[in-house]
Length: 314
Image (tube, rainbow, N blue to C red; front, side, top):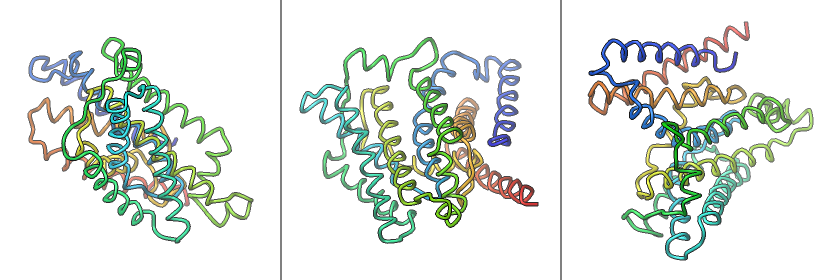
């Protein structure tokens, strides 16, 4: 089952957390409504980006610029909303379109000059990070949309934030595309065996450009959701998100060489990272412990993925 390993690990960790919360309800408030709400608010930030990055990784490419795109496009949307009085219903789609265009540009450069996407998007990450400071500077910028937009993208139903509901919707949509649509089949084929994909009439360049554009758009979408939730954008807010997204994908069972992965795995990978962070915060552990655990998880996940692939080939 795609994502089966991470599903088992996630359920086991959740069971341990619930048991710990029941045994020590005062010291370990894992089941408190406030803690559940905060955790569910945090997951979509990396979740949306991971969906786009994961789709691109399945196609056999990487995008390290998503963290910078996350911040740059949300600042553009906030500037349109605040300084130019453009409606949030127009500013947000424009920001997402700019993110898709940036992703498409990364893809065009990668394919046109036969360069590794890792290098191209590393350069793009630094370029757009500098553009953030050039366009706006180092100060935060407010993002205050109308009440309807605020509720639909930044509100909550009980303890469940709207952003988490949207993440579920997008995860299901991406799953349907990957498993039941021609584009999904082409993405798997291009990432798994490019020569074979060409032999059966698939155009790898077009498929990869589509995946690059989706990755950029999803990074922008994540920035819009985060800006709506906190009503402000910090120029340094997207730093490190690209590595967390790749970590979520790897932990979720995606092959680094492309051609294998699932949306369930990506979703659970993102959720597991923030679950671990939440547990460490509740235990009052130092912040750097998160890096230790995530780093160990990445290595373990790659080992398990390689073992699964070897068993499948055997």
